[in-house]
Length: 115
Image 1: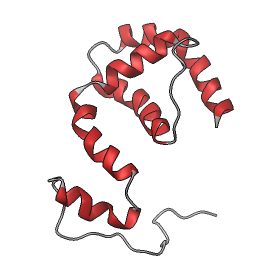
Image 2: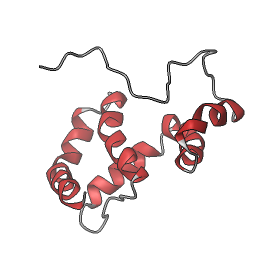
Image 3: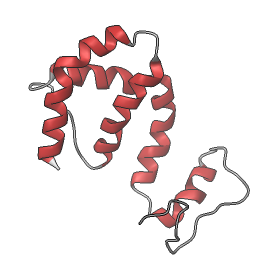
Image 4: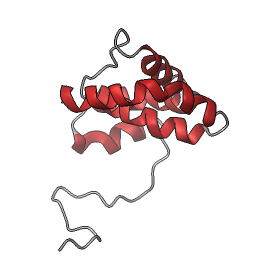
């Protein structure tokens, strides 16, 4: 996992300032980039701030946004919880969930046709 992440970090680092200026009012675009790093953090990856300081600051700033901060307690709890228990855990924590779920214990074919 290190090699692809290094490639992405090396690619993004020179562009972070340009992206910040260009997308000044478009917060959704910030989230689109930062969510990759949030997901990578679940696998134990952290941006190397010494190697990519602009990218590290950008990711830290976006992940500190209320939208991410609000979800952090749910995410942290779910990381330590078996998938089968996720629904009951988020309900216990007060997350708004639907009365029914489409979750099953076995995979099922999706809508997209392949081949």
